[in-house]
Each structure stands twice: as structure tokens, then as C-alpha cells.
Length: 271
Image 1 (cartoon, rainbow, N blue to C red):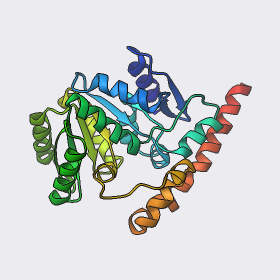
Image 2: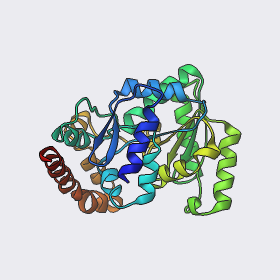
Image 3: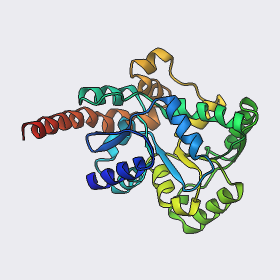
């Protein structure tokens, strides 16, 4: 996986001045929110297809054991630190200039930019067609000028060739500048990476619950909780049945992982 990430960093930065660093074995782009928006604006609607990933604590843990997720990350053109704990870990490991660029902040910024420039944004997600329709209507009202479309795919679509072909057909017919998947992670990133060549152009991004946030169907944590790195606890309180295992079982592996990376970095310095 390390070799894959090294190749990804080299290819993604070959034609531009995106600065890459490594958080353990995970690449990070050293950009601000505004810079990320500018890069995505440059790529929107253009070939080749570009993938943006937003590593958070859950991603960093999952990447250690999921090869397909690692392969998706390996072809990313931007990798943005999604969450204050990721920024703290980067600083602890001696990385400089890493700033929090969460997907939940990036999505509304992109919608606003797209509204000004007339982008086409295609959303894949929603709990059902009714929720998707409501989200698209509200997003369109909030960002007039942004041309929105979308679909709510059936469960397991990613493993069904016919469902995948049908979804790709709808996406290509719409011709999005931005392709925004809210079907869970790592499913979203893996699907986008696997079908990058068929998608051909534009920018793909996994948005998690971002569509619900932007549409006003779900609140975000207060700013003080975001700054304190406690946004996860706010979400856990709202959806304990769905999220308890992620936050209280899986993600507790993050601290030992960061400590291991610190030990490895010290050993490299000594050698």
C-alpha cells in the first residue's frame, strides 16, 4: 500500500503545485479550504476524472486493513484532512501546514462556487427517492444557478453489474461537473475509483451525510464542538444505534496507530 500511495502522490502533483505529505502510510494534501475549492473548480467538468478523498479517523483506521480502499486512496488527486483529530495527529508526527478541510465544509463551499459558475452537480444517495428529491429541491433553492440531479440507488448496487451500468448511464447522461456520492465509506470512494475511466471527466467526492447537512435535514455539531474535535460525539448522540460501533469500537484504534507511526518515524531518524 505504501508503494501505491507514493505513486499516487507523484502522479497527482506532477503537473501542479499541490504539496503532499504522509500521515503514516496515508497521503495528505497540504491545502486550505479555499485552495481545495480552487483546485476542484479547475478540474470541474474537465478530463480526466479526478477523485477527492477526505481522510478522517475512521478512514485512517479502515485503510490499514482494506486493500480496495487503499487502492482508491492511491489514485486520489486531493486528500484533505477531515477532522481536528487528523490535524492534531499530523502535528504530533511533525507534519507542517496541514489544515482541517472537512467534507462537511467543502460541500457547501463547492455548491456556492458551482451556483456562481453554473456547474452541474449529481448526487448519488439519500435513504430513498423521497428524501433525495427533498434534498435536491432544497439544495437547488439554496444555491440557485447550481444545476442539480441525482438518484437513490438500491442497496448493493455497487456489486451488481447491471445496477452499476444503469447508474453510470444516468450520470453520463447528466454530464456532471461534480459527482457527489453519499452511500457510505469506503463504498463511495471505491466505486468512484473503480469507474474513473468510464466517468471520464469532472470531480468525484464522497460526501457522507453532507447532502443532508446542506439540505437542512440534519444539523451539524456546534462550532465549538467542531473546533474541539468532538463532532463525532454529537453525531453519536444523534444516531447511537448506527454509529456506536464505528466510534466506540473501531475508531479507538486510531491512537495506537498514531503512536506506532511516531515510533516508526523515530526509528527511521535513528537509522
